[in-house]
Length: 159
Image (cartoon, rainbow, N blue to C red):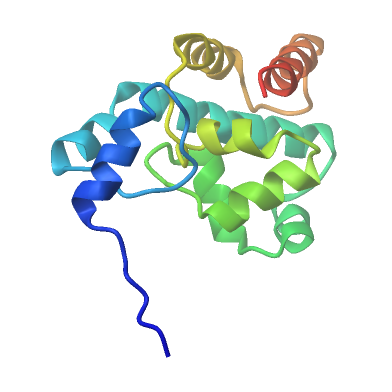
């Protein structure tokens, strides 16, 4: 049986750095400083927008937390954490389940949820504006529906 040779960490580092400016869906940060930067303010604002998007999409679809959790096969606590805790990082399987359930582009939702690298200032700005203008009281207002529709269209166009 042939022994499988794995590339070194240095090889991976060179490969990642040669692709600067491109997006990554998974991967370990190169060093702790990069990890702190990845969890910085920009990432926090997009994760907050992800929670707002999920909450508004769920409400717009007239789903309870329990119904959505059952539909995408996750725990109710995870849905609540995504919707209300910007420090919570959803699992990739959950993120993809949400994207599929609401017919959203998976790659853009992964970026929004903080599970993919962000190299797009416009994306961060749009996500931040969306999160800042979303509210979760009662039924969706006409303005919330318009905001949700416009942001979903932006996500679909930016893929």
